[in-house]
Length: 377
Image 1 (cartoon, rainbow, N blue to C red):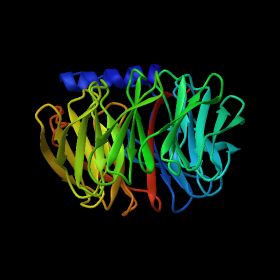
Image 2 (image 1 turned 90 degrees about the vertical axis):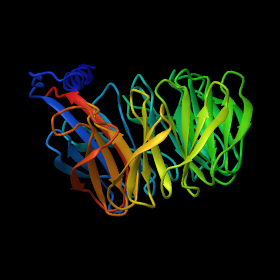
Image 3 (image 1 turned 90 degrees about the horizontal axis):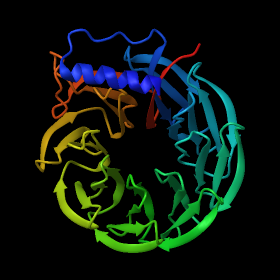
């Protein structure tokens, strides 16, 4: 909490044009962690120096990453070695390896930092990990093709996409059992849960549809027609809209969450892979995998404001803790583009990002997570 407060203060001061920006504690750390699926490693970037700090060897074919909000730990899902690597952010070394079941792709951590949830796509179940004990406390049978699990913001449910059953499993995290299954659409691949935990939107890659499911009644509310191959969903922080990246349609669909209606579908770039909404709800950043660019879309004005060249096949994105840098992971070129969201006079310019630097990564980088903290060592 102390580190987050410090980062927020720095960002606010810069945005307000403070003359005397406070120097952070000498022990303050800002790191980005990127999983390199092609060479079984995680690259650690020092975001204050914008340079590689170290490279950490993990399991085979690392994919998803998660940061613990209360401990200085990073969790890596290793798909081919069927385990989770625990990286100590203080030392940036692997301090534990936790075996799960077959083919984990993603990991999600509870808001209290006590548990991690891992959907095992090759064994039709969900691993529940006690992060203090660093061990699996239960395997919950969920269904075939359990490729992704996300926690609701209130922590009461884990939602599992069942790709091979065209449905989702709703898991009660107190009872550690499946509460219900809900049929959705063909090949669900992505989940987005609104901030009040009342609904989940499910992107189905083979049906050009997004399903809206009520998490109070466990009922399918509607199926929404979007573009071809909806692959990812970005949620506005205020929960008012979600944005669906239609990979094979070069478009984004905007869904109003209160009415469960598609408000607009607009062209954005070649093969959009991922969207990210700015913390102020004003802008949508889109990584266009096929055109090696990041597009910026003004949500309020309904228009694209910029298209910025990056590396080859951009996919994952994250904002730096102070929200002044946009970090873009380029899977094809094996590097990270750092885009500045301020101009050369230190004024905010989030609608027209500018190239700050490029940082080499490992082979086939996949996911990114950031961590800010004050070191106790």
